[in-house]
Amino acid sequence: MMWRPSLLLLLLLLRRGAEGKPSPDAGPHGQGRVHQAAPLSEAPHDDAHGNFQYDHEAFLGREVAKEFDQLSPEESQARLGRIVDRMDRAGDGDGWVSLTELRAWIAHTQQRHIRDSVSAAWNTYDTDRDGRVGWEELRNATYGHYEPGEEFHDVEDAETYKKMLARDERRFRVADQDGDSVATREELTAFLHPEEFPHMRDIVIAETLEDLDKNKDGYVQVEEYIADLYSAEPGEEEPAWVQTEREQFRDFRDLNKDGRLDGSEVGHWVLPPAQDQPLVEANHLLHESDTDKDGRLSKAEILGNWNMFVGSQATNYGEDLTRHHDEL
Image 1: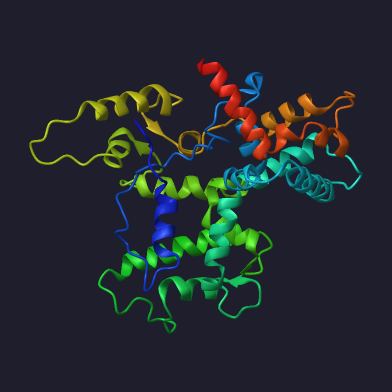
Image 2: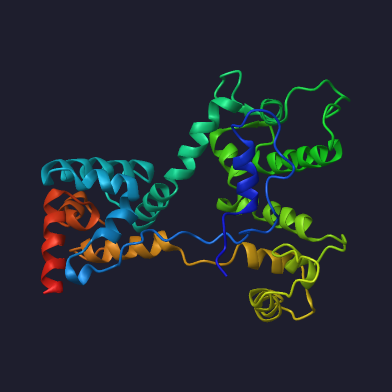
């Protein structure tokens, strides 16, 4: 079954930046709860044939890789040199790029779209323009201004909104790591994109359990799991894919085979262990560029293998020739 965008994110995206209050009916529960790490690139990893598009997109991010494709080789190398300096400055500043620094850079570029989405929403929440977002600011921007004791007196489903507000406040408190009730940009990012932050793991699991656990016994039964995915019409025969999901629950979700999912099993399902893709790519780039085999990269070593790290008009032309030769 193909998983669709996370409900946790869907609800937030529908709320944030919209006029008025968030909708309590923003979408059916359970559509795409699993947070799988996106691949660094959709291009084939085909270094053997001189096609470095995967490496370019992994190292730069997809949109910036397109920009580099339009540069001359000289400008591409010059910009790569500036990136090397940034990688080192962000680390220990010792004049070398370590595996850790290279991995951190790749992870940073891959999360650019998340940072951009937070930047686009920032002014909506930072209403006093002090460079931080207080809980009161976020609450009022999302739910509207209410006097104490009058929360949601003007809406039909007040109890639902109160629960949503309490849930948002709880998530905000977890994201607010220093406990000052004011979110930095990093803390707001954790609030809006909790699946990206290890310290938010428990809140993602708790919210998923609350959504699915209709009988409030602290577990997800198989029927609750199915109900989150499919609602049968009267007299309708259950589709084959639903039976497949029952089998998935039995064989892969219910790890201890007790017929239900506890918090640990829910976490394994919605936030599955994943390969550290930035680390794998960083190891690859280091291995291919570390000419003196000292386990780190100098600026000269990186620039000496610049066409693997970044693209240009020249490398695009070479890749086109390689593909044409393979087709022949």
